[in-house]
Length: 234
Image (cartoon, rainbow, N blue to C red; front, side, top):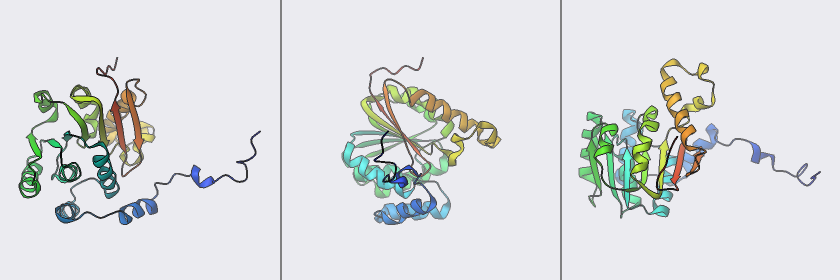
């Protein structure tokens, strides 16, 4: 019997840490946005437009500088905040971002015209289900922040366009904890999202040709790495 951990163990290591006070700490103690990113963050908060939360912003800064992606695909532009964030911290990258919401497209175009100083970002207008088929280039990083029930629908086409060793990050995959509940406890209006996310997890988390990680930042990230040229889901 191992005795060394019975009395001396750090039991705090076994407690979940993503509590409200910890989330507040992450959002208030990491480097704030500056300049146009701070302006866009304030605008999004004022207009109740969902953009990535600050703990994800901090993670993306590190991720962009570490991975140094050259060709980024984003599905879900909104006002262009995350595309401009990635452009700032991956200045060598070309970024293609897709959205179908006309109001968001108009705002994103205005923001890109003002702040995309290196002309890194190309905005593709339309439904990603249709637009993905028109893309004939390869990407080494993909950020998915669109309709959550569609993630699993977009996945095969995205993987076809992802380079070997490339990374996909899916945003908001915990749905406020709903994904851990039985479906009967989930509101009926949210069950399509619930089913879509569980289908995504089933296809990715234990796939032999993908490395996957669930990351408890904001409403959860799923991060996967492509480890084979051809990814089959049979």
